[in-house]
Length: 207
Image: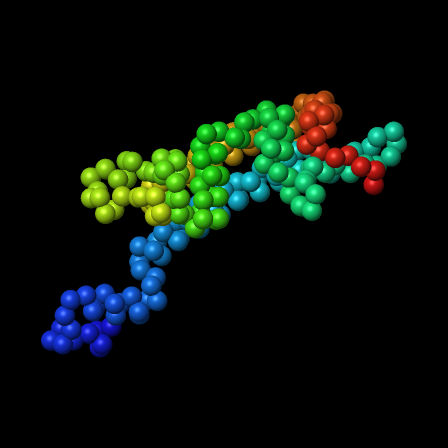
């Protein structure tokens, strides 16, 4: 850009256009936003994967009924390989933890906004739901989010979102560990399995 821009020949905002061409429109603040959005999307997905794998570890993969070997599977919707969100929530409630806190629901909605709308706030309701009022304090009007613009992220908001997911993981880990490794596991496991089956969270099939 230094070789192309001559302050004696160029006036106005030509240097801005030259830089925009050089980075193909990917300005530093845009790159930062993409990185932050990716971190949130990956974190929410990893959180859901943890909930699924923790359940599978807790319930095991097989049991013997009337002398016959049966396999235990988490219930999944047709043509899918992973259980739905309602199944994950209900199953963890049976185990003894709540995984659908307000913070988790907000993070999942934000992941949906980032994934399916590229972060675009398309309504006043979305603006109210995802506006970060604290981050906008002291900012001029041009730096505030608006309907039609992208949701504001920023390092503090990303870390806060990840921390809220981590807190739920820590809470959910205790009953999962107890069912897998505690001394009472053997006596408790059949009751948990029965409750999960009654709630249609698992499928038990002959091998």
